[in-house]
Length: 148
Image (cartoon, rainbow, N blue to C red; front, side, top):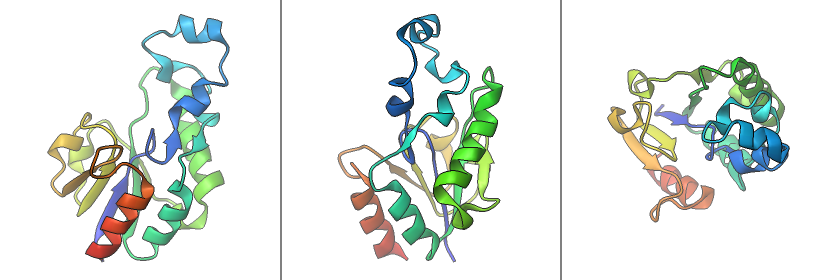
């Protein structure tokens, strides 16, 4: 079975949806460091199509969530775990990996919206979510299903 890693922020979860729920003064206080706002990761909604795609892909791939978590925001670690439990349920049970070095994980595919934190050195195929080739979950799922 092929191994698939999926990033959280702006791939499974809509970061902006959480930011929109934070008071303007707090946003300004954390200007340039919005990911350090305590509790922000608990406020985020799923990206359109993400939950359905995760469910479908996890039946065919050995699927993991591979995400970074801000070092200066300790609540982010537990908030991400709770988000996965709430939104992804059983298919994601004990499949959350938090790392600042994504390239240390081995697999066939990584779906990520950025090339930071080792995503650019991942030793499988990087599927650049939000790019022209993979603009949304429909495009990602279609491609991955053709590779299964």
